[in-house]
Picture 1 (cartoon, helix red, strand yellow):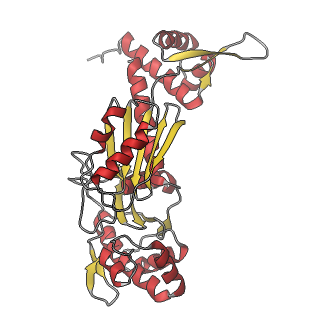
Picture 2 (cartoon, helix red, strand yellow):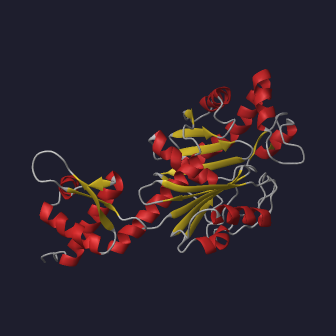
Picture 3 (tube, helix red, strand yellow):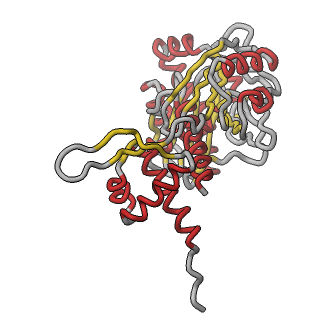
Length: 364
């Protein structure tokens, strides 16, 4: 049976998409340059540019090529194609940005937030930051330093969590500022997505060691979120405590006196001082973290362990954890995370990608 030929409408839609994606990558191009980059004939590209210009998605910039031969007109994405909102909710406050389809940040705002903020204060801070940005945006992507329920997008309060914002619903808070979907995930999952591009392997475990504790398992290049979205919440995994007895990982820091006063948050400054002045503390922490990572290695079979967070990236800590894992039955290399603000970086990249899909969808 002879396969059906693609319709003229489908071919035009594919060509239009190629033109838009070329302009998203290179900002301004002539029709000849678009043809060269896409491998599509110049007449076909010219027709597509005319269609896209008529639909308001592409504009003639008014600039012309110089040199020999006929001058060519430069085309670019039309202004006013909308923005995506990106927000990070953490103990450092709420940071919100708007980005366009070219990936440029066109607005940024920050609102303060305390570590024990609670749902209502966190909601006010998120709304405050979003209000300062020109909108509404076409979609939003949110990174939150708390577990996130996969089905509802609400934040989840787990025992001993150092950053408490209750059952905050970012989608509901952002509804006045966004006309489309709101995607919410945990900050450690976003950080793992950012590090995926840096490490160059598809199977690894990302561990956040900072004021809080977190983990993300990446297999075949995708973060595994679990049934509820709570995969990687390692604070209550039992490991070896300072006296050799079994205890939840989060309790190790209480036993060592490395928590902030009246909080379950780890005192990072005190921890750094302790491991610098006392090799035994570094060994104790490495043994505790190594016990959790050994379980992750057994279950997920990663090619690499990536350590992030304020004290996870310290050379002394990385070396001590690496030593612990090297002595185990299944040694796995340990490396330090390299991406700055990885959670916001990955959330921003996802927001730009989703916005571009909306722009391309308009052409279809």
